[in-house]
Length: 200
Image (cartoon, rainbow, N blue to C red; front, side, top):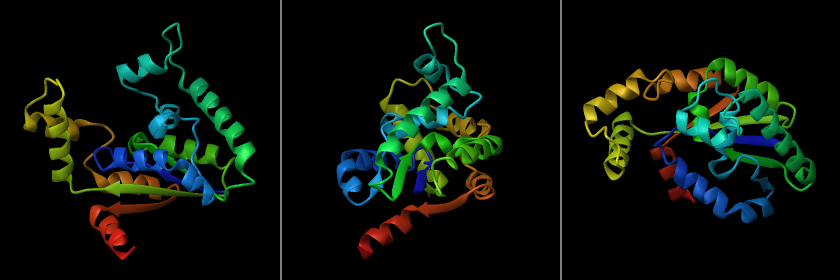
């Protein structure tokens, strides 16, 4: 079975892509494309299992009752769920589609760990990453903050926060390069997708 793993990036249309995937899960299945339910909506549980550091909010959501978060235990549980799903569906599907925008910010070590784990389930892994101009990404992020009650209303401070992130959200080369060094990666821009849709 081939895997197509969409890794975002955040503010690059991931929610729209995920809504389409979830709402068309049965139609995709009829075409031989399996969409797992193991990782929840947006499949974000998958990347949680490969992060040494997660936000306080996600730590609260995914921690056990005692408040402890053990990523290796979480990863093992998520992969067990995936194994169960795939065991019952591999005979009916040739491809699997997973979308988790949190994957884009994984470190290279974590990507290698993920690649090794996925090799148990898939003969081939292809990475899809959707990019947009950084200025558009910043405007989208700022717009989201204005609609929420986020205290960061200063766009200059927002840009500074993006640059200070260890995952380098605005450094597309760094993100794509680390994924390409481990697995086959296909970057898409808005114009690429738009042209493909127009051709269809």
